[in-house]
Image (cartoon, rainbow, N blue to C red):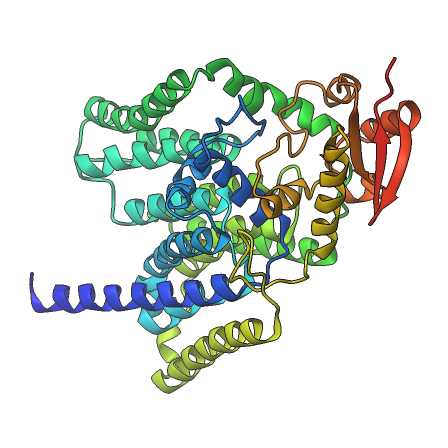
Length: 465
């Protein structure tokens, strides 16, 4: 390894360590309150507790994300451990953002970009983040030119993994990869490229098949992850689009338009064309719910595409200004982390222990106490709420179903609840649970007996007929 390569290696290692420390600081200090994080943690802990997805609990997501993050929870089942493990993975995402832009921006500015992403985007990860990681890895491979057999194999492997994290958008990424497999010129023969690529694709696919067959959930998987998607999209409530969402969409469109214009002027930049295609693929993450969070993967890939296609003279920015910008960004990371750690309360006796809280969850604990009282009387409380995962985590249990996505008929599930069941449902169900069908609440209110009301929840008894 020559001196320059050694220097770059040490620099990259140093950058990655800085990103890991920053992610751990911001992830740890993030006040708990975001339901997306709680849902993902709950599914991961469910697998760690021995429950099988699609069989023991319904969900429409692919299993890989939850299987991966169930591993550390088998050692210590707390949200803190989950956050620390996801922080390291998030640092890898940011590191690939850094690598994607380093050639154009240089070390200083290219480090600012992922750090700003860390500050502005969610301080937790989802399966969409893993899809973004796959896209960034593929971009880095294509920017190095796909001339090695190992690169072709790796493209197939990563493209297939993107499907394992999100079946819809990931499938589009895989299709784009197949198109570019035939489109791009290479010193490797087309026949060999096809064999290598699909050998890479086969590894995740065969692994998934073995997992499904070993757990006897092959048909349940297809019902949840494919066929139920059509039903899920037809029965969800409306989600109003905010001004911020509209602004983000406009910025993505402008960034893509400028990148396309730059590519038209220089069509030799095949890697830019590939990045434009992936930017469009990432936009499908925002379907069917367009929010700034769901648009973040598209925003990030579009930003990387813009930086690498629209040639601006970043060298004109002085080193002093770059250092000041970098220092300010990391001061923000330190300040935000410190403020959140200091000004929030903590919970010491649950899986949420040692994590800052946005609110006390006392209402949820009171509901759990009320439900325990009804169990002592011989009844079986069943919570129907988007925050049901919170109740389970606080109680140390895993009590599915947690929502109706992937379920064949939510209304039939509600109709077939056994005698002596008490349905515990939010009095603001239609507003708080806008993704779930409203007829569930209507059926419960019309056919079951209201026996109690407590802390914003209504208690309906299934009558003995």
